[in-house]
Length: 463
Image (tube, rainbow, N blue to C red):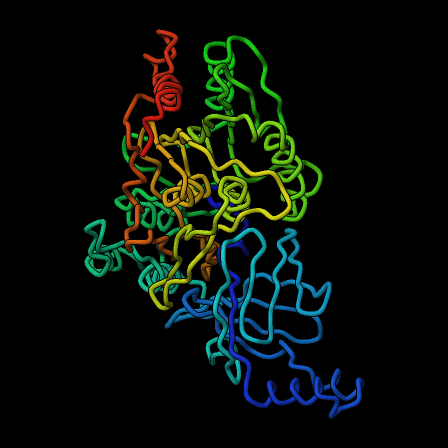
């Protein structure tokens, strides 16, 4: 996800699901029964045109004449967001390439996001959408605060009294407050959240904080860790690379395999669309999970220690190659919607591996890297997590515009385990804790997590 660490604006914002009306259902039934001519049935086919409220995402959609327009709403505001053009019936493509599928039965699917989002028809746009908001600092503050108030699910878990924060900071904002002062004030307000999916933007400036004691993955650390694994763990044998180098695989002694995934995005340099990323991922998975290899593989190490996130759906695609029976990956909800079950179903017609797996994680396992880790927790076959807790950010990101042109990112979803637990803030803990790419590990040529995984797979010490 920045998708989730670099995810597209639309990925976290545009959302949909709706229930068909009795009238629409009757029209369809009559058409199927032959009670209408083909032309008449087509003319009266349920349409997605109209106005929709996206439950739990602070968003209203207007759809007409082949164009989808987003409006970002709170109790005190309505700001026009992004738009998308229809490319096929009910399918819309935004300027950044994000594809949204709107169904007249009341659901919206955002390509790359897990599950659907609920839409409810409304008669018209909210009244606030009919006029422009003032761009003054006080109005901007109120929209900023209200956006978090209505959407951020983790204040209680993090011990933050958001109303007290408002009482402290709003008196400091007045008509002459500069943009720089406002940016600093907003940054101070969200800093105690230490949430990698929260960010404040003003032009080229941005503010974000990760969980204390951790860092975000970057190209330098990724390259260093990758070289360390090749030199030390793979004995200099270069792994086979796929998906723009973001996925690599090597066979290990004793019938084990090593699969490294550094992200769930940027698999295709030329085409940023989800379809292109999925195609590249499938090529990689076909090569890694060949019929011959899966038949002889005795254990698999999946290295997510440097994983910057991306598309949750791509993580689910990998999980489909790691099971022979369906199971619950997780359930998603907002503060205003019921938990939606997201399942892992075995990939059809493709070779799969359902044996023991050791998953390596760390604080630089972020967003979609974490939802993938969570999707393996209830995997029917033995799965062991080794390393350090993940970063602790799972939700898609709402990209909210502010009246004065500034912007903010914030999460609005919870990812629940089968027992109703979430790991936001704390991250998913390992079964076996080891050091992960520390200065000492590099200096002393160690890789404690890798060695522990090899031993666990060899001795079948998996949960």
